[in-house]
Amino acid sequence: MPIGRPRKTIDPNKVAEIIGELGGTDAKLAVALGIKPNSLDVWKKRNPELVKTLNQRKLVADQAVEKSLYQRALGYSHKSEKIFLSKDGEIVRAETVEHYPPDPTSCIFWLKNRQQEEWRERREPDINQTNVQINGAARDLVTSIRAFAKKQIAAKRTKTAQVVDVEAKKIS
Image (tube, rainbow, N blue to C red; front, side):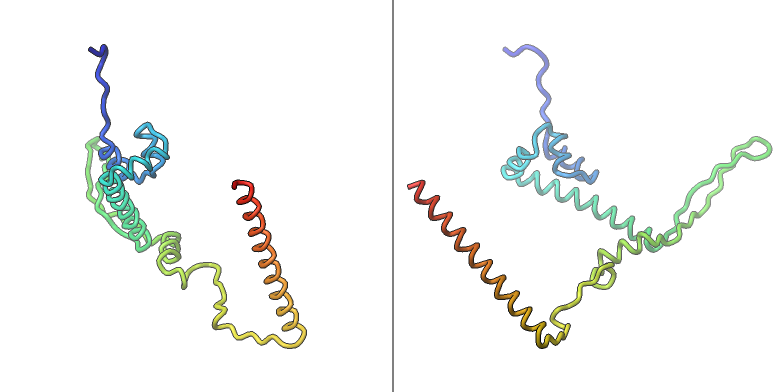
């Protein structure tokens, strides 16, 4: 008969719910469960319900943040209550509406992530639409660079194949 207090068992799905709602990562879940991240990967393979729970809760947290970012980008208002002390010493409660103007940083962040082609800071030229004429010496230079690069790649492939052959002979 065992002596002492019985061990408390932790339901990993409940812990996953809490960590997921808080926007936690898999590493934080592993710490909360008292296991290593590699062990969590094994647990997730054995328990698809754990993965489902964690992903659902992470999605809820992500949606809440997305909604908040959206509201900050557009600006918003909400009702609140201000508490004052009157000249007579009485507490006066006044219902007010607080306004928050649009936040330019939130707007930029939203647009850079949602419309990357239009709003990212660094634009890559589209090579397919760029019509560059290479004439004379420049064309010869580009041709010789391409030929050199092809030779280098072929030499590396040959060298790699030779090393593999030597290693295979050593093993057998």
